[in-house]
Amino acid sequence: MAKRQRMKSDDVEQLLDYFPGFMAISDVEGHILAINKNLAKVFNKPRDALIGQNGFTLVDDQAGKRRRQCMQEAVRTKQPTQLVDRDKERWWKSLFVPILDASNKVVKLCFYIEDITKEKEREELTISMKDDYYKALIEHSSDLITLIDAQDKIVYTSPVISKLYGYKRSERINHPIFDNIEAHERSKLMNLKKKLLPKYGETKKIKLRVPHKDGSSRYLESIVTNQLNNPNIKGIIVNTRDITDLEEQRLQLLNQKNYLESLLDSTAEIIFTIKTGDQSIGMWNRAAELNTGVKHSEVRGKSLRALPLFENLPEIETYIQHVTAGKSRALSQIVIQVPHRGKRLWQVSPSFIEEHDEITEIICVCSDITYRSELHGKLIPGEVYLIPETPIDQAQSIFTSLLKEGWAGYYISRTDQDVQQFSHAPNLTVSTCATEKGTAPTISTLDELYHNIATFMKTHTNAVVLLDRLDYFVSLFSFQDTVKTLYRINDVIRARQGIFLLHINKLLFAHEQYAYFMEEFRNLPSQEIQHIQLQDDAHGILSYIMEQNVKNSIVTQAKICTHQHVSKVTAQKRLHELLRDGLIISKKQGRINALYLTEKGRELLLHQKIL
Image (tube, rainbow, N blue to C red; front, side):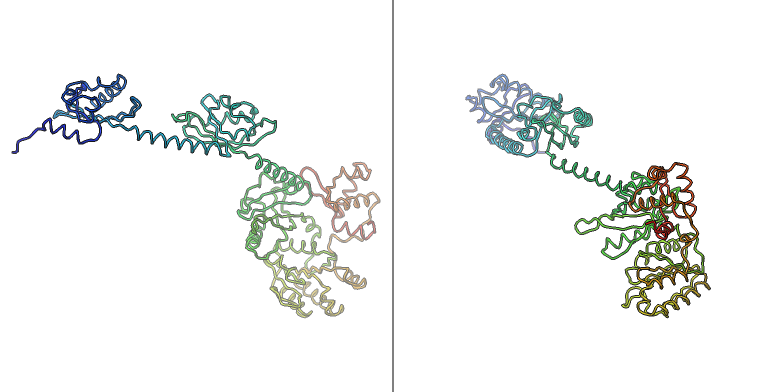
């Protein structure tokens, strides 16, 4: 076995001299056992003269004390320890490395001391440059940066404070953050602080209304971060930006919105909006609330499917899908199932709100035509009913109500556009009497008209036919031939127990022709007025109701008493007579009973030349 060799003193000194810094080996008390030439030169003594001396006595008391504590820490932990300190205008880094014997006991220490003054100067210069850099960013930022201590006093604030508040920095530093803030805003700030304090690093956002020095107000939005436990900050950082312009615009838009909603709430028309994205309800005006008994708060933000209101929901959904895809689609009526009130029929005129060329919301302006569909009374199967009015609204209303009762329908009109609104209805057949081909089958002769209706009647039970624009056939053919065809159709209707609704614009026919139709075909049950005799005060009440209906004003019994100068007892008696004869109807709207003129009442006034 090879014999172990120990390092000689000269070998150790040669090794120590190899290192460029100051290096030595000592015992655990600090007595020098070996030293390199660089450190000996610092002490200005030969190596031999330094061996055995305590190295801590060769330096200043404070420096010696710091190094002794570092060495003792290395002896205690048996791990290398490091010290960076400043002595005699120089920066030093000292490293103490414990040397252990075979029993794991520290018997010696090797310490290395390095002059790091230039490195520290470069580091401090870099830090100073960074400080200047960040300070420039903060000082020239348009956002206000404020540091608040644990006692709520402002420690630092950036110069932009004079622009936001009108105060100089000196007027705010060392003053409480709550100064000049109104009680409500101060309470918001206090609540925010309570949420921030328990969690270091927690960040919250807050919007405050604060006073400017000139007496005006500013709206500020702040990001507040808890850095109280950060030893380099020890405060709460508040980053603030001025949002006064944005907030004033928001308030202005809100006021406009409230004004428009108030305006829409005052109209008699039912108005609501549907957002195309999630098909949810946006606006729901006062008239919609009164008509349904459902409040705005109960429907806003809810999807159509989540609301048990819309009876013809598939039709509405299909309409939304088509219009948002840029396809043509008509929506003329909405069926509402009102809790505890039954069904309502709304005639709707849709319009759109667009953003970036996309439809984002559908505005539905509706009128309740339920009472119109209720006016015709019980129609007798096997009859032809004449509906002599300029618009076709009532005829379509009756036709629609029969379809919803399960009747099979056949609608014949002038063009594709006329029949399009009914193209979605179940159990429906449509035709047009256009000269050019369209999407719907066309009828070009009187024989085809008869054949199509007869075939429809024979292939369907409970069948109803609505023929619009009879004048078109009269203009193409003769009046006599058209009447003959109607007689043939009448025979089929009677045999099959169907219903034939004949819509006529009396302005397009000669007086004798129109009189002939009136003689040959039935009026709607509600329009039989020949045997009705009214007293003068009843006529006055009926006329007043019509005038107010035209103005979309709600008519009540109390208003009638005031306007007509009649007693409550007389008003009740006359209204009972008018209701009995079907000249008016009463509809519950909220807590009041509103009165409406029926078509029968209108016809009576026209017939007796009241208007």
